[in-house]
Amino acid sequence: MWRRAAVAAGRGLPGMAGRRWRSGAGSPERAAAERAPRIYTRTGDAGFSSTFTGERRPKGDRIFEALGATDELSSAIGLAGEFSSEKGHTFVDQLHKVQCMLQDVGSNIATPLSSAREAHLKRTSFSEKPILELEQWIDSYSEQLPPLRAFILPVGAACAPHFLGVALLLCYHGRTAWEAAIPMGNTKGKAEPRSWELHLP
Image 1 (tube, rainbow, N blue to C red):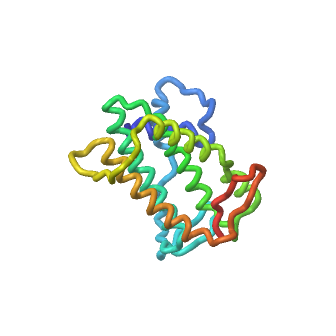
Image 2: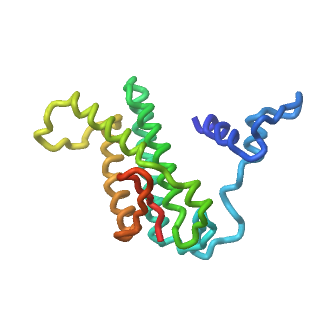
């Protein structure tokens, strides 16, 4: 699974699209791995990290707290998706799509308004369409369930429902981190009435 993910990531690297591979030059997978960007800088960070706009902020900044919460949630959803796939559940593709939505959320959070140019905002903004789609999924699945009259305890062996419960808890944590990072009145309306942006100050 990790190997497939690495290869897929390589397709998006600059200069990779449409490239022809000569016989004996190595596989596309190997070339993609060789051209993949490093995940370390060798420069040290002195407790600071960069946003998408290039601004340096302390690692304890609320932006990085919100980003970490987003990644935690995506990881739990991915794990739940793996267990769900083994059991043949039909909602696995929807879980993967939620992870893609969270990638967009993370890009948006990593683009603070204080240092963002218009090009940054345009590249990381998104409409309310994914949110509406998610609400439709919730409504559809809710109609298939009996009324909930008691709390559900997350107990038992590792299984899809258990990790979906973990994802739910991390979603609550993420919401707290996101709301703490977005001061009241800092949302920015767009064309549609319920559209919004997460860009932070």
